[in-house]
Image (cartoon, rainbow, N blue to C red; front, side, top):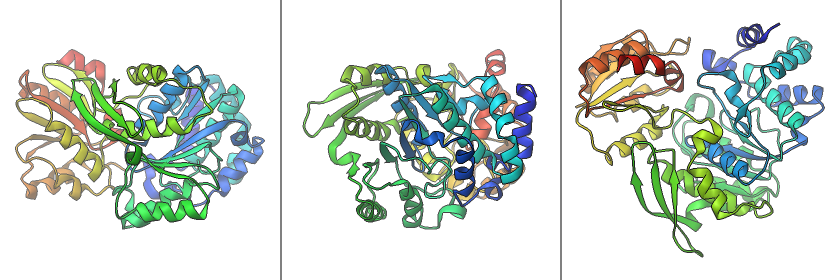
Length: 433
């Protein structure tokens, strides 16, 4: 098989969460452990940091990867889902894994696929671990796919565990209270391995304290040691002033412009401080944070792809993510707001729509995956909330309409689903604008 045939085989043979939803989620680590055994347990051959959380885990993972990379360490990065290219999921020093590796790995693991019948995600996790072991990385940043306790990535014994925050997402799989969701995320806490919690909430604090206590794991709440004293937003960056309880205020320039990075940076700084045996200087941190996108290939987090009018891609897709996006809007200037939105069926669309501003112009659309919520259905859900607009079969058609109606000082946001953002044709947008 060539590369395209290999990718088609993986997509079409294996149950895929992005396509099927919960039917593809295996609440069990057995398959992953069996796959890893067939591969001579590659997860035991490299050091790692494990990152879970409802929102922010992607940004935190990429920032940490950028920092370790800048400090001179050969750094693996496993994230999901991808936006444009499957290989985005598996990187070393920001470079996507080789096509030949994916072909060879799939051929090697094919008998196990037929015997074990794993999910798409279970295979990609095993693939990443095998690649990092082959590449002899110094450290790998491993982002959890969903939850934590039963997530396929949870077969590693990391140097550090991180839980960015707890919010409302995947309730059908993780639980209907913040405490239940926190319990699932806390499943990545390991015996005697330090754990960083990015945000302290009354509903979840004791869940983490109890879990860490049971595992004899040192527990750190980032906000106990670090705090943001000031920040300044630009179109494609944010400057954040951070105070440490023992050190003077330090200014950081981030090329990730979302206001929510004021929370994520505290998590990152606390994590780096705990990795004392790794030689990472303040200069390494500041240099890395200025060019996270360049170093790691991160996209879709308040990503401005056009000016006049400004078009922003934002993968916010749940209540907490949308709240943070709206907070960002309150801190920037624009004339009219145009929101291109599409969601998937298993998200709580009603709670997201209830948050959105009534004065915006809406363009309801959908990604081309089976999980996508029909654009017309989304439009009908929005109508009783006085969110008015037309529906469009695809996101690029919707953006084309915004450009017809938007003035130069307007703001266009594409949000609601990472799969929707993935279908934005940036070249086409540039031509139309």
